[in-house]
Length: 294
Image 1 (cartoon, rainbow, N blue to C red):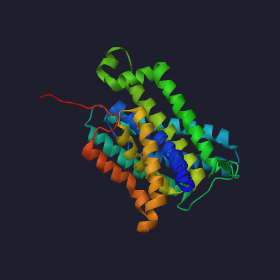
Image 2 (tube, one colour):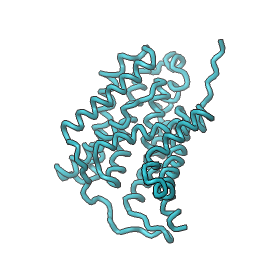
Image 3 (spheres, rainbow, N blue to C red):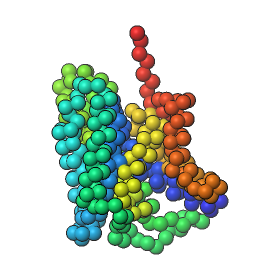
Image 4 (spheres, helix red, strand yellow):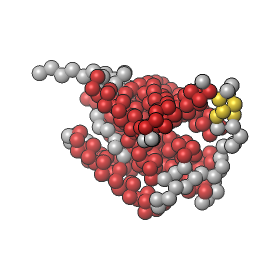
């Protein structure tokens, strides 16, 4: 029972980080109907920037994280303006292919600047384990869960009550109607990409503190795609619930099934779930069904 609870806690923590990163997928899809395949590279760049500030320039973690978030927001704005805005009005597949090319460019830049070797954050969180009943949890897991919950809560309030958040929701529902009300769709797109870069950076920093930092972190962006599809590509609550589900399933698979098959099943389980969801519930748990009449 203790082992089960240990796997459950680990799954919830990792799943909550997945949910945060999946929020970027959802925002970009809602605003432009496109999937951003460079989400993992946003995560990777943000993580390395924060690591460099903390390790090389000895900036305390919190200020370094704030600088990283500002950098990520600017990166998202610049990429949207220079690379992606010219594709507004073009077929969605053109924008998707642009994000695939962008992911390769960003990954190459990371390899040139930071290399391939695994790096670790200096000790930021306490290393004294915390006992929750019979379960022993590392403080970094608890801090990661707390940070993700705060971030998700702030974004929920932002989308529900702020002027920009309401404008983003209106644009996601109907771009033409939003434009008729004086909402700049281009500004909304830019904001969506900036937020996607920010949430990816936060997710990368948290996972980097847990597992170390190397270029394989970019794979998390692809792994989070099943999270977004499971919850529904246009559903923010769905991204949160989907993240927790995928995280728990992945953790349980690693704990119980990997020893039986020799390992590796944990890494592919999210994509097995992705295939099953697309087969039986292609709009996800909370996605809106789109019915086109001819």
